[in-house]
Image (cartoon, rainbow, N blue to C red; front, side):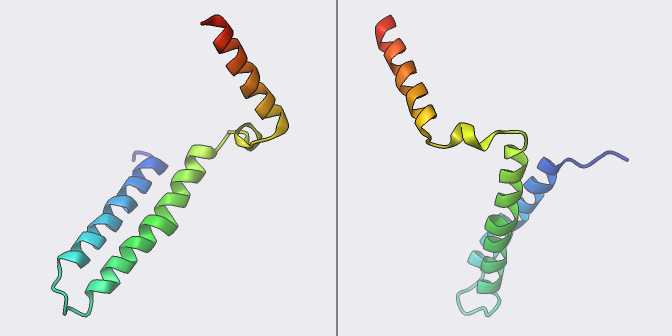
Length: 87
């Protein structure tokens, strides 16, 4: 049996969520279940699939590299100075 990867699970959750949203939108306006399908799809997309994706993509990365600290600002300014001097 093949090992199912997290990216495939996230993709399936995303497809199911989008399918639920579009199904809810395609139902007639008076249908009482339409808002439930749209809501379930939205919850699946934003409260399940997105956090899983962000967790998967951020593993092994240092958060301090992406924060705007004094050291990182100085590094960016130094890179910009070097870039303008080379041109």
